[in-house]
Image (cartoon, rainbow, N blue to C red; front, side, top):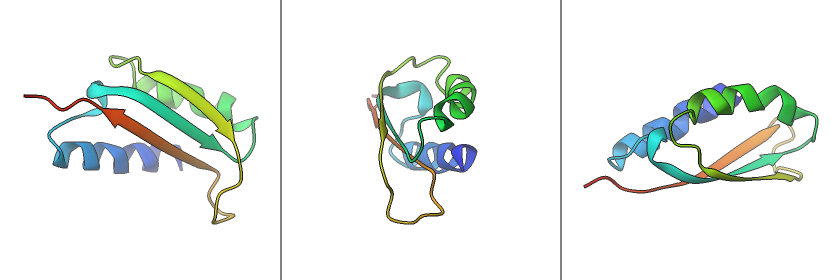
Length: 78
């Protein structure tokens, strides 16, 4: 799910003229705190250049199949 989320975010950012390198803020919504250990290396890979400010929240999501949601704020180039 984490890799798919990053693919979705990357596509949305590209449509807006930005990329993951332009992300300045990220919110992670996890359904279980133990998932953070699993997603941290993936997030680190995708945000290696941006190093955004981050907040992780433990919560319930609407669809029980969803274990993670990621929300980003990015600056726009140009």
